[in-house]
Image (cartoon, rainbow, N blue to C red; front, side, top):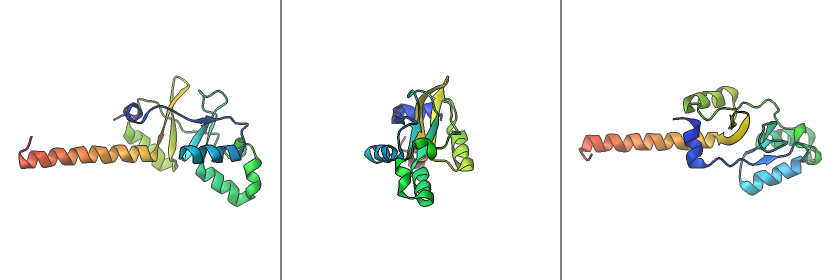
Length: 144
């Protein structure tokens, strides 16, 4: 299975925030949409960075509540690992595990076209295993 298959079921909507937004705005967006990360983008189509709940928590621990007034660029990750829609999920899982990241923007021809979280990958894997289990149970019981 490929990332494009996950996006087909999940959808390709990606929330972005401007790099000149402050961290308080980031926290509001994350909470309102119940998401763990947001792509930082000047134009909504390119990936300039990514900002996550982890980034906020680390910055708060280091600098205190004053960080909420700082620009997102003060806490975001600028070197973002991205994947193409035709990337196999096994490769994506390896990237997420090796790099200890939970969100990967999906980019095609330099344009942001989705985002995949570790939760999306786990859900997909559980669905695959359930389908296999059902097929094996049907085969064993003869109920094809």
